[in-house]
Image (cartoon, rainbow, N blue to C red; front, top):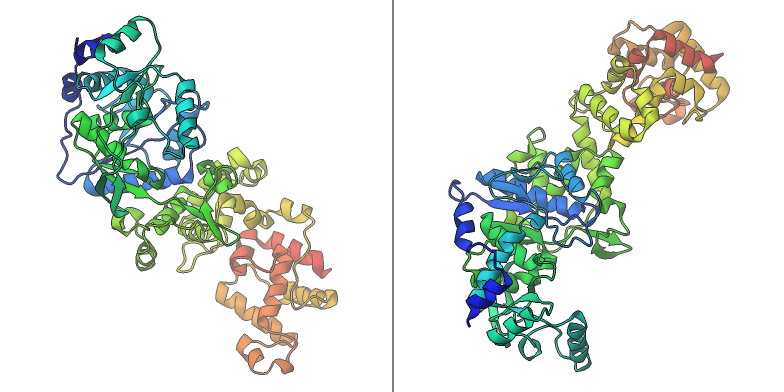
Amino acid sequence: MDYKDLADLIFPDAKPIAYYEEKYPERNLPEGAIVTRFAPSPTGFVHIGGLYQSLIAKTMAEKTGGVFFLRVEDTDQKREVENGVTDIVNSLKDFDMPPDEGMISDSEEIGNYGPYKQSLRKDIYQAYAKFLIEQGKAYPCFCTPEEVDHIRKKQESAKIRPGYYGVWAKCRNLTVEEAIEKIKNGEKYIVRFKSPGREDRKIKHKDVIKGNVDFPENDQDIVIIKADGLPTYHFAHAVDDHLMRTTLVIRSDEWLSSVPLHLQLFASLGFRPPKYAHISPIMKNDNGNKRKLSKRKDPEAAVSYYREQGIPADAVKEYLLNIANSSFENWRRANPDKDIKEFDFQMNKMSVSGALFDMVKLLDISKNVISKYDANKVYTESLKWAESYDNELKDILSNKEYSIKVLNIERGKAKPRRDISKWSDVKYCIEYMYDDKFFNNRDEYEFDKISDKEEIKKILKLYISKYYNEADDQTTWFSKIKDLAEELGYAREVKEYKKEPEKWPGHVGDISTVIRVAVTKRRNTPDLYEIMHVLGKDSVEKRINLLAE
């Protein structure tokens, strides 16, 4: 008996690998085109690090005329969560990064290199595992979990490197006849890779991001097919990346130590390996110490957080590119209106150590992004968010025509308003523009330098009786505010006041602040003239008279 007999006994129905090599041919793509993927497991929420990898993968594929596909690695079915695949698909959709191929819902896919769900590729993995057994490069292992645990404990007590390798690999040297007899006797088994490596030998590897890295060879006889007939991650990824014709694997650097094993698997299977790019994790400053963004501790680790807060996808992607390439910030400064797809992203410029996540910076970028949206887009996006997360804002926005006028204040100018960093800010930023909210809420008036009630009354009475005219253009309107200031004994110009502050109780800016607070209850708002113009004569007079009388 030989290895082929053993392989036929274990996998009697597996097709020859030539069938799959023909079914999934080399892709017909331009030279230098990158084929890459996002390959998450549906075992929990989608992490911002996964979105980061996807953005880089999609950017590189688009830049080179290649392919970005979504493969779901669901072989660990005990840990799979409900709607896990749907969440993955929706996360890419929410951030406008749909895959060119792969899963497009829990059960639908597009592309000619599927199935793109590993649990549906069992026959393929078994064909390649059978091929390895036929070559004497894999074998059935009959050790029970208890026996493997016993081996590990003996190694730990002897302070020996743990694992199933060398003399510790009990089933490695079973003869074909012994293995066949055990299978026929009904003994349970898994399939292990027979590593040709030795730990005292080194391999050299050039990572796209990390550069040249040396590793000891892999000598572990890892499991490649589990007891349920499904593959382990290591084996499945090698088979899949070969048959899907992946040219660049972009993944977290926690997988860097697996490179020797993965290269060994590719070599043993006769595959040309892809290039690897290992991305450093996104870090967080925790009381002066750097640590990885944690699924347990940090809400911003979950991609769903950005949707819940209403941070636009454009802003998140812009921020991630900012931490991916240090040259992005200067490019954006020089090209404020260009699409991020025009940025010449370079993988070799990525940080070798982890980028620090900065929510303040992200929200500042988000303010810039939203400031460039027109009022219609701000309205549509904030209403869409409100329909899921804020019924009160949804009600406020029910008057579409008026709400668009409100959101258009100080928009489309050389220096547009930057008060909205996320859709959850919108309610606070606009609610004072709605009379029912203004007159019903109990917010205090935020008067500043001029806070004496009688002085405020005097200013407002004079303004509404003598100077307010809804028909005034902005220049005339402000000139009248200056006249008002002068009549009340305040400096007509701020610079005059700054030269001789002892001459006046205040200046025109202090007068306009009183009007602003009377109309909005706030010291800081967008352009006051535009606010009053949108509110209209009746509302402005009613608000001012509330304090003037």
